[in-house]
Length: 398
Image 1: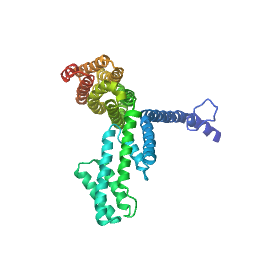
Image 2 (image 1 turned 60 degrees about the vertical axis):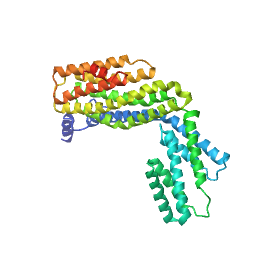
Image 3 (image 1 turned 180 degrees about the vertical axis):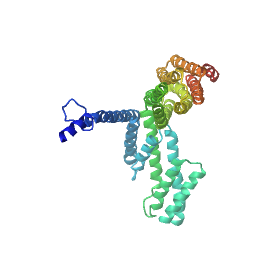
Image 4 (image 1 turned 120 degrees about the vertical axis):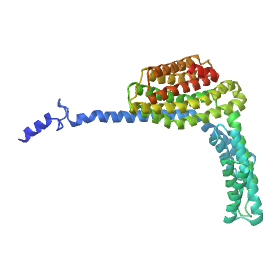
């Protein structure tokens, strides 16, 4: 009786079969799901590894610059100038290199301004009321207030406050740290600027390629995902593309920071002056690409609404989204190769033409918005390629 029940249950698929048998039980049914989970984890781990490698490749020069600047400033402050407290010099150098990519000159000026304000405020109060906990609080409040009066930013206020803390906590009989700290700030900032612009200047074009390339590819890839999702009426995939584009805002800001650093080096480093023309073109393009990225995210968000509402989707609409993504890649590669971006312009024009064809074929409310935004982003890309706004708008059909 028990054997018959087991056989009947096995036939119905309710009981797992013994391994090695021809039937498919519960354990066999779970294997595909387990395999998909493992492959998904492996793919995610691969993406993280590739992302870490790209970040290291982009920022390794910054780490190298910071190391060299810290060593040199420590040597100059401690050995050459015989400063009894040289630790702030390498700290200032590292802060200038790592915390102000693209604004090293301004960062050094802020560093010195903050230290000087802190020294002046600290000496003024300590000379009158001495040192101690209450005096430290007054010194810090006064130093930061003075920094605010002179329109100092966050870096100026931090340096003014930290210098005031040091002065307020040192007893009158202790060593004078005002002059050494000012000298250390000057040494650290000066060495950092020299390393970043003269000793180990980054290659601006290569750096922009490494930083901007993955970001542009990410945007282009997600536009491809969105285009296929629209073609296949897959709202979940379109939503995933939208989420990924919104998460990519961090990478886009990092790219903007790196482009600023490359521009600074191309302008100020005599070893990189020949790269200025390429960087100027890229800087002009970046202004319009910023708007293109923002409108692209809004466009993909509208594709989700389009699919959720079940609106009609002519074949030309997903094709237009796909071709615009391709034009982003082509524009970046043409710029860095020094070529006139004719192919990118042609692909962008094709995307605009397909968007107009989709509009003529009949679209719903969200579909019309997607088509209109496509024409807008095409115009921004054409302006980024060097065309005047009137010409870009005409080719985009705006």
